[in-house]
Length: 137
Image 1 (tube, rainbow, N blue to C red):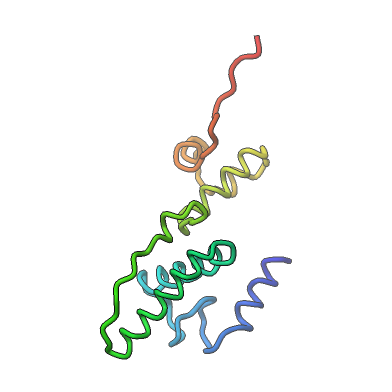
Image 2 (image 1 turned 180 degrees about the vertical axis):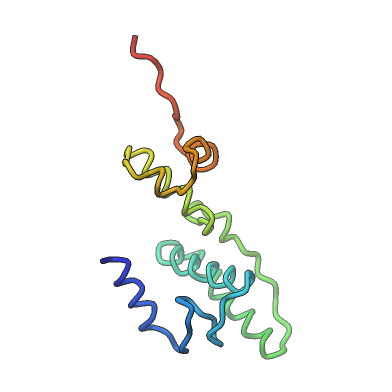
């Protein structure tokens, strides 16, 4: 039910008709660099809500990019976003979700990971600090 609501909201907020759930401005699929840019802006918005330094950095970055689009020379901005402790990459989401399921001992953790062999799930996605418990006696 929640997934349907998210999909409907994504479709409703579009500016262009497309077969893609998250299309670019022309209604096409994002390129790798295009999606990276979108993710970076989303992380700036997320972290900028509680860290004023990151919000200022995003504002400076946006001004620099606007000047470049106008053909003007712009000062370089040193980006510190990826060094922020709250920053996470899109590739961190799946391991975090699988680890949460393993920690909660959810019955569907291995189905969720979609690996034929559970050892593959543990090898590549298990981020728990303690993976094995010691004997009680």
